[in-house]
Image (tube, rainbow, N blue to C red):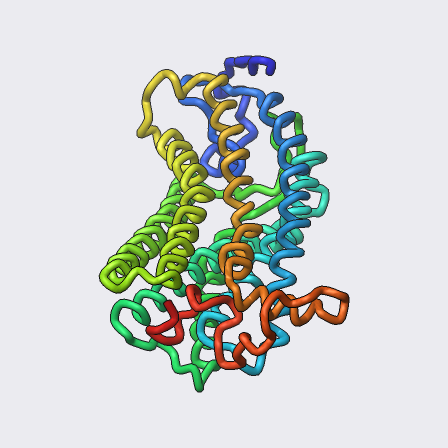
Length: 367
């Protein structure tokens, strides 16, 4: 990898710019604090190869996985319970987020060629579904916690529209959180990135810092705390009872859900937090003020964000394919194509969840 060059500058070189409105991107770190402007050839080259390949893989796997889940839910639409409804909205959020990935892949390879209106639409759509996915996971965790630990039903199985309305409120809240993207996202050329046109937010540094902290708090810290607390108490409740095979399976599923969430999202959020601290001037170590360090941070943001977005592909596996009953529903659908059920078809109940006893939260005996 070539070492990025340092270019010194004076204020006269930027006399034509409104420095109070300097552009910042979600995808790369800000200027170093040592009075230099760094070209980003190395990070651009890495992005142009890494992002299109990984996003294409995520798109293919995610569309198939979430599509299968939606088909199963559609076949079972007359008997959806609380868990099924939350997973339905989670799948929709993941699918809509996945549909934005081709635009970002093209941007990484050739720059943003779609204009500012589509930049705003795609960026806002991405942000809405990103937040929605995180919040739906939190809702599922809270519903499981109340159902298993306290035997309290947040939503009535006989009134699924109540659960749908709750999900609609989540969607509307996510729409509000995307307002900065509707306002500030623009397609603009960046001289530091080979004069490439990119879809980036163009706002004042204090606004950028505020949106970053909003993301850190609402997009990761609060959902993480809720998920950890919910599953911690769920595991405690399960361990008090008899360790039957069904309960052991439930513990494995819960641990897998928590571990997968943090494996995908923790590296990106830690890297983004470092970038936020550097931008805010909180980090003053000389190791983070050189062009080489800035490039390392750019590459780290790209790699960790891609890992985070791959969580959309993992969700169908964690919330569906680990469920015995889901596999039975799926095999029943595929039976006309020649697939055979390994067990009696009567095992699938119309009133039960499409996922499994270990994932259903509609009653306390689900585990």
